[in-house]
Image 1 (cartoon, helix red, strand yellow):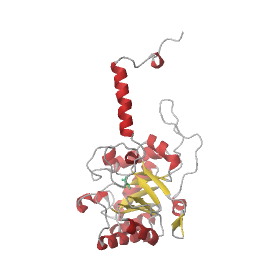
Image 2: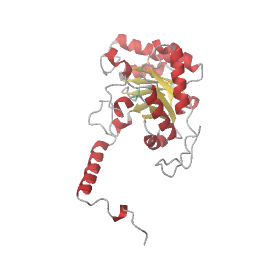
Image 3: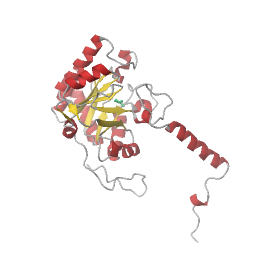
Image 4: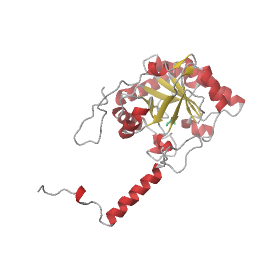
Length: 289
Ligand code: KIV
């Protein structure tokens, strides 16, 4: 499926005139050699075609995260997110990108019950979106599922440490791995999914020391979010790093303050409309002279 030939006179889609070669799972995995990633992997979340287009030239991977539940739909957590939502947004991001590897999150309830259920859900996601990989949360308990999918042609990105779909079991979104027992469990989880064939693993909200040890212990790239600079790559929720929310977690660096800038732009528009200074003749259709 070609994703960079969107071309309609009425759409705002503006595909790249020079399609590149999309990043593949083996190429990405190969970026970590002899336990080291020369150049850290760059990953951000994207949920829409346009954001995909804007992020794509700068990223190795784009994740259509189930964080879209909170960011796009205003839901209280990722738990209510559905396969339909993930498929619709995944397809949009694949259409808007041509360079980065696109991975789509498997939503809560779509994979945990059995490897067979996970395969059916993941196959649907891949068919309907054109993405190259899926991501699922969980460690040792999910290792048989990771193996089942990877042996059947579905690349899996794993996710351990703070796993937001388990918020009700964890009791919140606090950092993980503070106690020795918890750190050992997370290390075991990371090793289990790596052994089961995951091509990379997201480490969320874990202590720096543990992130360092896991990154050394597994052959696949680790992608950190709130897991220190010791990981092989980094991911953030794009809306967080662009400053679209007033409050962000401590591990987020804000690279802009889009919330204020959008507020100022909209205030200016509202003022123009109320003063009848928009539209001007520049924005008005009139018979040609
Ligand atoms: O859903 C998401 O956006 C994620 C990342 C934050 C890793 O899982």
